[in-house]
Image 1 (cartoon, rainbow, N blue to C red):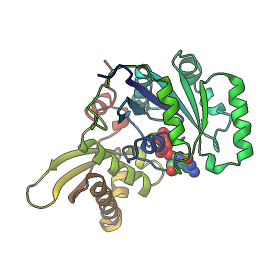
Image 2: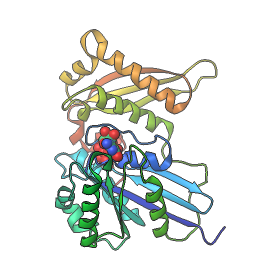
Image 3: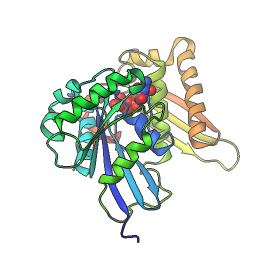
Image 4: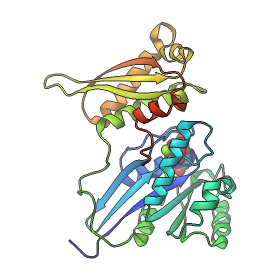
Length: 303
Ligand SMILES: Nc1nc2c(ncn2[C@@H]2O[C@H](COP(=O)(O)OP(=O)(O)OP(=O)(O)O)[C@@H](O)[C@H]2O)c(=O)[nH]1
Ligand SMILES: [Mg+2]
């Protein structure tokens, strides 16, 4: 083992919709985390591993920081907290269009009382700089540099891959030395089933409005790799109310048909093989506030 190897965990933290998952995917060079224009897309910590000869960065993409209003959101915040605990380096990310001075981010108690006070190296990413002028970027850099809260402040456009390399280099600077923790060819710790369920959820977030996508959870109930023909995947869409089931299915089944089609295409792209996707909708009253159901859906492995 090379003694100069650098290895460590890097937590990507920020408000919902700031671009955490887009940054993770840009750094990995592949789509692992789902991304949508709606806040609270990511619900669980997503681990993404970037291995090169002399380093291994283990990224933790996290749900957006929020003040929880129901149990599911509490579980989401648990994942944020454990990611912070696990991290060797903290990457905080802001959306320069929505929260240019990071006032909203710093207003969050968890950020104010815990993240900022952490002794771990902290980098601040000013994301979405493609949406503002260069003058504004310079102004923001000066503003945050004078605060002296961060080791480095880096302007970024995660979508357009501007400065992604610099983010990676700065992270490596602050990584501890140590042997790699995962095999070089391993990208994540979750299985295909998990990512397939995430893709279905991504498509629901894209296709449905208001509270409907937020009331959905996806369970993969069957996943068969058949020797001949396509893989067979059966997914259950769990909703909270009968009315939401009606909306998901749509008039004459048009909604769920469209969902099945776009989700299948995206799953096939991810798996690089053809699949048959079956979708069913089930009502589980108030699952978002039900400790046992949430546990069975894999939320928060709180010891
Ligand atoms: N213009 C622009 N949009 C971006 C950039 N990075 C991310 N976005 C968009 O911002 C939205 C949110 O991106 P995500 O990566 O899902 O954000 P997130 O922080 O993971 O959000 P949650 O998982 O909900 O907490 C998406 O519509 C992205 O396409 C960027 O650099 N520039
Ligand atoms: Mg996300």
